[in-house]
Image (cartoon, rainbow, N blue to C red; front, side, top):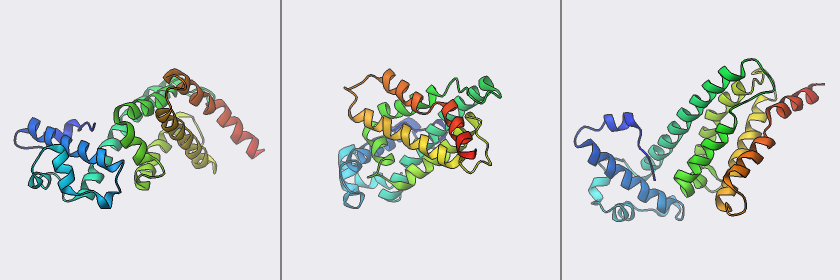
Length: 212
C-alpha cells in the first residue's frame, strides 16, 4: 500500500482527501499487477478496473504507466531518504569521533525491514534482480553518503564506495530473503545477524588490513 507524502497532498487542489485516495488506489492496483506482470503487458484498463475507477480518471494523475511507476518509486525513495537522514543525524551526534561505534546502525536495518513489512512484494520486486535497476541504483545513492558519514569512513578512501555497496547489498538481500522466508527466524534475529555482518569496527579493520 502506497503512502502519499504530506507535501503531495497539499498540491492537490480540489477535494484533496478524495484525490489522494483515488491516486493511492491507482498506485496500489498498479503495484499488485507489476509484481506478477511485465510492465509492457500491463494496461491502463486493468489498473483502473482493479482500482474501481473510470479509465479517464487515470489521466488526471498520470501521463502513462511509466509515469505512474516513476511517481511510485519517487514516493518510496523520498520516504526512505527522510527516515535514513533522521537516523543518521541522531547517530552522528551520538558517535562523535568514535571510529568503532555506530550506536544506532540497527535503525538502518529496522527502517529497511519496516519498508519490507509495509510495502512487501512491491519493494522487494523494485529493489530485486527482476525489478527496475534504476530504483536500486537510486536507493544506493541515498544510502551511500549517509552510511559513509555514519561510520566515519574516510571519504577519500578508494574503498569507501565498495564498502558502502557491499553493506547495502548485504542488508537488502538479507532482508529480502527474510521477507520471503520469515518463518525461519524472528525479526530481531535477522536484525542482529545483519548488524553483526556489518559491524563498523570490522569495516575499519578491513580498510586497515588492505592499506597495510
